[in-house]
Image 1 (cartoon, rainbow, N blue to C red):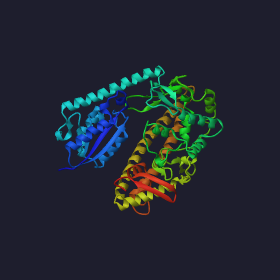
Image 2 (cartoon, rainbow, N blue to C red; image 1 turned 90 degrees about the horizontal axis):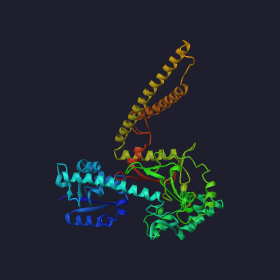
Image 3 (cartoon, rainbow, N blue to C red; image 1 turned 135 degrees about the vertical axis):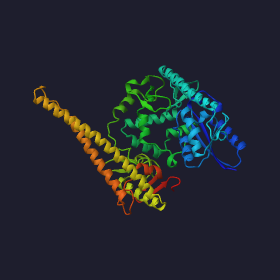
Image 4 (cartoon, rainbow, N blue to C red; image 1 turned 180 degrees about the vertical axis):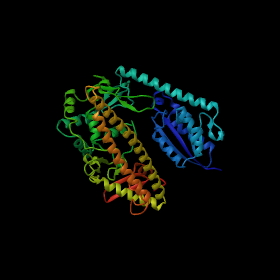
Length: 505
């Protein structure tokens, strides 16, 4: 009998919680699915994936993404959900997984509430009843989301506080969840932050002081009050300058509620920030913690210092982690760029990374990756992939060059024709778009430089002259890092630990 590696998937959205559908709670879903597995399977291993508070209109959910990753890796061959809407409320996406993706990967899919088991549909698509239910779920989700959005918009216009959680320093009134009351234990921390700022202390200095004296962070207050559960990175919750800054610029503390800062263009889409003049501000909504004069004085002295320039596009950003505090290292783009741990300014730890050279880190990781892939017989295949990637980029640059050259030629032709008309007396002035010509020439120069770099790297790989041995790739790319490396723990330039992704460790 076939052994099943079963994934039970649980999901509860904010809309579900708002409408108080107890049958959809995470606890109820788990109990239902575990019971189903125990009654219908004998030889199995069980895995659980959960998304609490996420919409079903898209697949951008951490639990879902982790489950799909393991499915693609061949670690799971059966998925069980309470009903189709727990997995997805998008009709087209759900249909793709049921009829194409899961069958191709050999994954059995079961929806307990809908009485659906893909093993009953081997070699054929699901019946009309299943497809009709999927469509109803999709339409229901979009209709429900629009109703919720409309309801929230009306409440915001009335000046009601509609967020699911209360801001730090406040708690929701027991008799009215749209009203805010001061939480004195948290408010005292807020007052202290503003007082220290008015005394001339920076956000970094305040965060460091709070970490040294053991002042509880906002998330710790929530955990102690049973409002959330979370585990800290590095074993301890710490204040940071960004947390302090967020509190200092929040108008909630002078009694105002600022809403409609963001909107979504469509259900499941990304938030879009509105211009300041379009925000909806309800003045005097609740009791203030900070008086307006002090708040305004704090704002006058903020935002004048220019932060170090950082580049989020470097391929190692998000992969390098401070070995001491376990926070991501930041990229500082200077003449000699480096990675650093900005948390060292505010936490109480002595061994956070001060500075590691970017070029050194690139070469070190590239060398380790090459050695690892050579040992596993992956080097040649990866070099071929890298050559293919470079070849595609070269083709794109060449196409852009051809179009830009044609435009430049057209601009020069127009310039010549305009000059001829002026000389022949057809026009009184000689018109020429000199700025456009100059821009085109500068862009063409950039394309030539890019093309030269790409062709050099491509030829180096193809000819086997890129390193100490033939066929070694010369550049660390984002694709390589994403495929093989999970995290890189950095203590200093002499102590570095690479955590490889599963199946490559």
